[in-house]
Image (cartoon, rainbow, N blue to C red):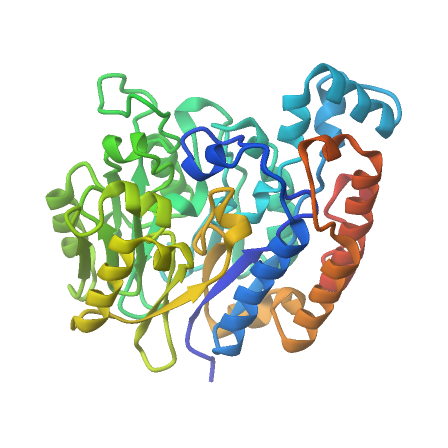
Length: 447
């Protein structure tokens, strides 16, 4: 008899060039730590520790590999030539900001890697994947090819898995992946409601939009993904993010709301039309059992929600059926958030426990627990059909820790990005990693 469906978390391994270049406008943490000294080794080990913690609790936990950085193919496509060392020297002298962009380790935030729809929701009863084009930020727009190759190497069997190309790389179809997508359901293996949250319309100039920061996800991109994935109209909901929240630093919806099972945990200022959203969700939920946890601004001001990343937490259903909120350590350091969480635990709501993870290296670059993972609901047959070399076990965890400790630097400054040795170290590390994970040749330098 097949196992019941499970929600797996596929976390991105922090890459060897993890640095603080401050590339993401609209992301307060990214901007405020610009040019600080980073510690890639510590960042990667913190991420692996979070994964191991969940795997030890019985959650299905996988890993996704970093991308090649600095990305020399992009620099060559932009006209730089000569040896790899020549290219790095030229770009560091002529356009250091471009070097920072192609050196970003931002692929570690796999909540932006793709949008995933489980087989219970799709018309052909396969799991569908669409890599995000991430075209709002240049440093992220170069990720989707490797993301797509990695996902295809893991989810290969076409009888169970369907892979789509990323959307056209234009503003009207800006797509930021699962960071703006939430699935609600009674049981993971049953049909659920797929909630797409967008920041603006790509074609309707008169529609509401933020004034300070650009809204990265468009309605048109969300609609296109729903069509490609073969979702049912009656169980698909589109809602607009509050433009004021985007202007306050909520660059993705997962910075202000998170859902799991039948529960939606959100800030009262998250959505432009909250009553309509709740009506739509209640109408779409197959069993009508939606449970909401609404956080008033009087309890947690918007600024505190953004700085603490309260909502960029993982909301997980444990073996006992209770829900755990895994929050970053910054939540314990923000008075309003800590007080709110204490009250939350005293309430009779769907969230029954709160746990804290140390992800300070990622947090300083603007990514919390939820940014680091891509959620994929899989049935027992689908788990059996996927490549299992990326599922975290005690043995794999030990190998990855040893791999990080053997290859990663404990300090990177902006000037280090031009060092040809950093490129060689990174390529050697990634080549070894694909062997550990059994993924084959997914990087251009391996071809």
